[in-house]
Length: 271
Image 1 (tube, rainbow, N blue to C red):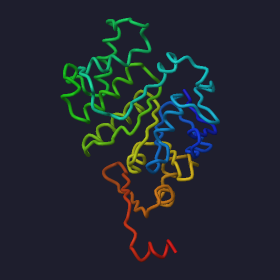
Image 2 (image 1 turned 60 degrees about the horizontal axis):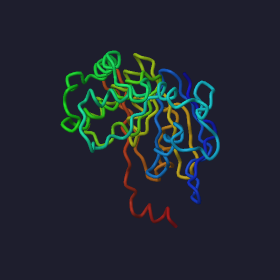
Image 3 (image 1 turned 90 degrees about the vertical axis):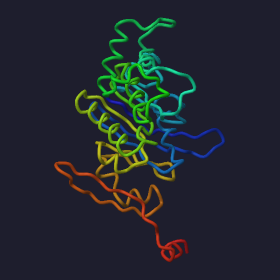
Image 4 (image 1 turned 30 degrees about the horizontal axis):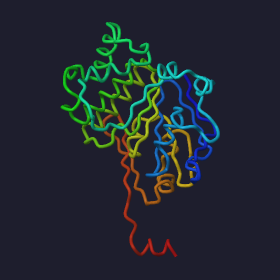
């Protein structure tokens, strides 16, 4: 499966243009990360690419077919959406939450059957949380709940996952667990994934491709290692950046963090 956005533009009515001529593509087995400063339009982009907001110009395509021409139920069988994890206002057990992902395969008012519950069991196992199936979602950790949302998306048996900041508000350990699950699903099951992230080092760690949103609404798309450079990150976030790669065992990791600009240099820059 190939998912594409071609020349996507978006602006709210009587507002400034947020996204300008955004183009990218991702195919089976690939991970695409989307980065940009707060307000650059990362979540807006996800909503536009999935048809939840209308493009002002351009469009989204699945295997060459305009998403606007794909019936909703068929679309959500092919794409699994993982929203930002937020506290629940009602109580579900883990397995009840995951079975909600089967809705695209059920008729109106149809109850989940044996096949649906079998899929739930498989999805819990795939993300490593089978032992939590009878726990209340309100009684598990943030990292565990994030994996519940991934399992719910997998329950639709999609070819692609779309994740909105999946590692946000998690500690180091749970960030690592979530990232490793995403990478394993793509490597072992040939899924593709598109994710928003605030962490350039995470994008460099697990992504094949990256889309960097710039302050003027334009973007840069390509190989993550080629796109996410010190220079491009400084341009996107308007702050000096330190980037260094470190090899640990057989793997290479990126260390990326913003650097305070000395006051005298800042004054000189602003003149």
